[in-house]
Image (tube, rainbow, N blue to C red; front, side):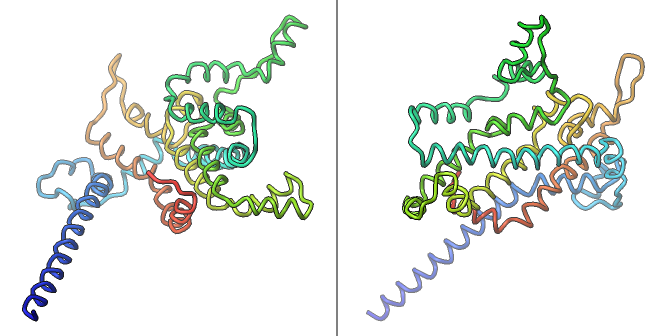
Length: 320
C-alpha cells in the first residue's frame, strides 16, 4: 500500500510538472508571436539603412542610430500631427462616454417603447463595416444641414444654408455627440450590459428618499459606473488614435499620426519626371520608426493604466 501511495504521489507530481512545462511552452510561444513584430520594428528602426541586410547582424545591429526617428519626426510633422490626434481622441472620448452612457442607461434601466427593436439597430451598427456608409457620411459632412433647417431656409430665401465640416475636428465630434462615433454601438452595448447588472434597490432607495430620475442618475448611478466609463474611454482613445480611414477621408490638410504614417512612403519619394522613386532601405527603416512613434504613446498609456483597465474589463463583464 505504501509503495502504491508513493507511486501515486510521484505520478501526480510528474503530471503537474509536465502540465506546468506545457503551459510555459504555450505561453512562451504566444509571447513570441505577440512580441516578434515589436522586436522587428525596434531592431530595424535603430540601425542605419546601409546596415539593413547585413548578415553579420540579424537582431542586434552593429551600429545604433536615432537618425531614423529624427528624420521621421520631421517628415511626418510628428508633433503637429500628434496635437491634432490628441485633440480628436480626448474630446471624442469624452463626448462618446457622455452620450453612449445616457443611451446605455436608457436601454438597460428604462422602459422604452420598442426598446428591443431599437437595440437591435444598435447591434446592427456594430456589424456594418464603415466602408458601407462612408459615402453618405462624407456627403453629410461636406454639406451639413442640422435637422433640415438649412433646407427650410433655402425654401424661404432660395439659397440653401449648409456648413462644410470637412477638414475640421467637428466631423469627429458630432458623431461622437450622437453615439455614432467610432465603435459607438459597442460603447452603448458596454454601458447597457453594465447598467443591466446593477441592483434595482439602488434606484428604489433613491426614489423613496424623494430623488427624481435625473438626480438618481447623477447621484447614485453615475458614481458606480466608473469601471464602464474607464473601459469606454480607453477603447475610444485607442481606436481614434489608430484610425486612419476616417482621418484620411475627412481631413485633407490636417493630418493625424496614423494618416501621416500612411503617407510617409510617398513623402520619402523623389519625383523624377512622371515617376516617383524612393530608396527602399530608407523607406523601410523610417516606416518602422514611424510605427514605433505611433504605438509608443499607446504602450505608455497601457502600462500606466494597466491595473485600472483590467479591473474595468472584469467589472463590466466584457470578454473576447
